[in-house]
Each structure stands twice: as structure tokens, then as C-alpha cells.
Image 1 (cartoon, one colour):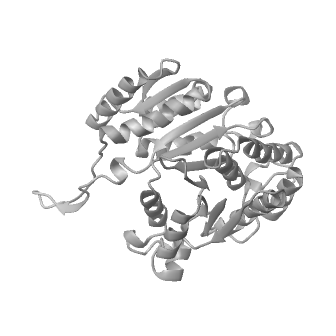
Image 2 (tube, rainbow, N blue to C red):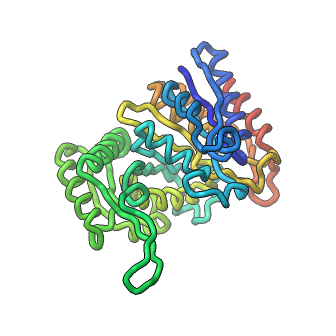
Image 3 (tube, rainbow, N blue to C red):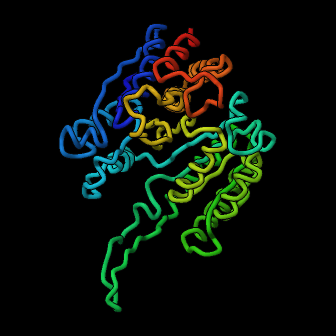
Length: 355
């Protein structure tokens, strides 16, 4: 099990460090784990002049799985778009063929009071968003800026999906739903967008191959409202790149903190890049304040999806539940009056809970 560790920027090195301690425990218990660290994002630019150094990409492609921390920071805001830290993530996703992003939103009972919604609305929340990663308006061509006939500058982008792209992400959605609650909601904007009309047609057709999965469709604006009105109606949501980007961030707040939610980006053979969904949080970087649990839970997803070890995933998830039940809280998930622990102390608690 060769795992590439890409700490990145901001709090990335701190949270990846704690996740690596979990890997040390598993290696001690007999798992043949090998890790190697490489720079990406701003750290990659600092090291080689590019957010995705060639050596980092080669490592990621040769590894069995990749664990990423976070990228970005204000010191890089003046760089040209193609050299900004975020291009490192976009580049590695494209180069590795990572087309399916899985983002669970689970509310742990101990954190119900931290959610911005009423406990009775979110108690027991357990949904999964399947987001297409390599197409849509983020990658469609042509794109750019130009001067129009009236002499005004304008920007333009292209929303684009082909049938094979829709089919492969839809199948991930159906298969994932089949392994969970057998309910799949496809989110689009088919009342306005030609791309979404095609999306709905393809997903509907594929639904006939999965008679055991209840398929529904929802416009993205309604889905955004339903996520805060009645989120437990959802089991699995499948959607495109830009809609999934927005909805998954919205869903993250249902769970109490963005610092609690992991993600997996998978290729067609289940090789993946795993990362917490939060950003680099440069305002708290280096201060021992970051919550490492989303990164630890990303490791659990790695063992479930890439390594096919659900028992190891359950062990890691159980350790996280245990530390929460014990009352350990970083600042982002602490209520007023609760004791706050740092990144290292939370990592200590997880390692102890693993046994």
C-alpha cells in the first residue's frame, strides 16, 4: 500500500501529519504501508515554480492512493491563474482521471447542537453527494475574455457534457445508492440548460438498469433549498461539477463544521485522491488550531474504496466517534464553555482510540 502524502499549504501539513500517525498505527498492526511526501499547490510553486511539480504528479500516479491536505493562501493571490495553488488540484484530478467525487455529510450525535439547523431537522443525517469532477463549465471550451460588438469587455465559459461522461458518473451514483439506502436524486437545471436536458435524459435511461434504486430528479435551486429544509430526504445525490461544488459545501454545514467532512475523488478503477473538503485556513495555520478529523476520515474512505478494507475504515471511523463521545473538541466544533484541544491533542486522542 503505497500512499502519496501531499500536505500542501496552510493547515495542510498539520492535518496530514496527524493522519500519518493513524497510518503509523496501522503499519504497526501489520499493514504493509509505505508513504512518501511531496509538495503541491503553493508549496509546489515555491519548490519548483509550478503548483503541480512533475515529480509530485509522477509520485501520485505511481502510488496506490493519494492523501491531500489543502492548498492556497493570500501570498499566491497575485499569481497568474495557471500558476495559482488551486491549479495543482485541478491538474492532478485531470491527469489521474479522477472523475467521481464522493462527499459524505454525516452528523455525529455529539455534534447535533453545533449544526446551524435545529437538531430535529438534522439528527441522524447521513447523505452522500456524488459530483462529476472533470467536465462541466470548469473545463468546457471555449472560454476566455473578449471585446463584444458594443465595445465592452465580456467573459465567457462553456458548460459541456457528453453522453459517456454523464453515463459514467451516473453509474457511480446508482451503484453507490444501491449499496446504501437505494435512493438516488439526480440534480440538474433541465428547465433552463440544454446540458441539463441531456443529463436528465441519460440518467433516466440508465435508471432502467437499476430497478432496485428509486430515482428522482430535482432542479438545483430546489435542491439547495431542500438541503436546509429537509436534508434527511436525501440518500445519494448525483450531479455535475459546478452544482456539486456548491451543494456539497452547503451540505457540509449541516454536519456542524466543514472540518468534519472527508472526500474521495476516484478513477474508473477506484484509485483515488482523498482530502478533507475544507480549505487551507491560512488564518490559523501553524497555530495548532486546525481540526484533523476530516483528514483522518478521508483515510477511512481510502481504505473503504481504494483498498477494499471496510473493516479498517470502520475502525478509523469508530475511533473518531469515540473521541467525540469523550468530549474532545477543536475550536470549530466546540460549544461555548466546552474545553478546546489543539490539532496535536486531537491526533493523540484518535491514536489512543485506535488502540
